[in-house]
Length: 303
Image (cartoon, rainbow, N blue to C red; front, top):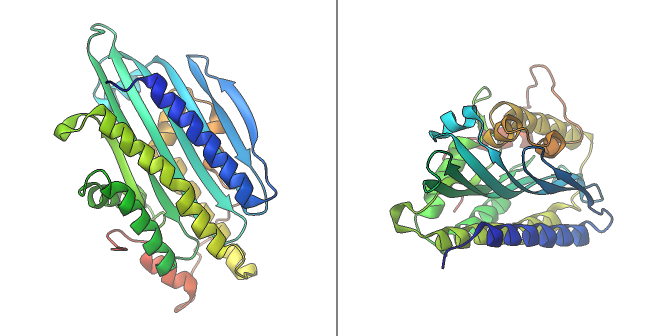
């Protein structure tokens, strides 16, 4: 049995529906607004955005696009002139409370067909989940990473350490010399190498996607009612600014979407509603903000 793109698309649409329903229930007030769109070059998607009591701005997007692979992307991926198909679910949630972390997930599938030799095809899966707390809490960080390790260990014991390091390296703001958050897992171009089948890679995608709500809803419920004041809100806005810097300067998904003439509003739904850039901002020594900065580095062992 060979997994088809139709089956992958069906799973991703259901994943979007399930996550949106659970997030609405958790928020209690906010409801997702859906915006269906079509890509001129082929395909389209469903962008869903929520604003509520828990989530100040959040997006849960599904897309399935196809067409001619731009030459710039072909060169970057070391592929011949091809037709491409790409589908995935992408999520970013910016909470109201600075005590609740920002979370991001993306699970995606990509395939190409060589224009000159249609028998020559490539395919792979990619994605991951990462967490960006405004304040790093050891207990929450351990829970997050242990949950991801459990999802990975169902498939291969090497997945978590490999993909955790990949996330540390990927979600790194080079010009700041700090990680975007506490990392998570990141993987790309998972195909049939190392003896894995397409079915096994698809199963792993589902484990990652299905782990999102149990992880996020636990962290949100644990922290959403904690008290905070102006100091915490101002710090939240500064950390959101770092999030924007990474997404606009370093994120490959953002660049891919824009380079393939994707829908700008959907691509940039990851931007927070409000962010600050304070010139030469310094944190107070011994503060919670200083402790958080000290943990925004690669290689922290949370499990």
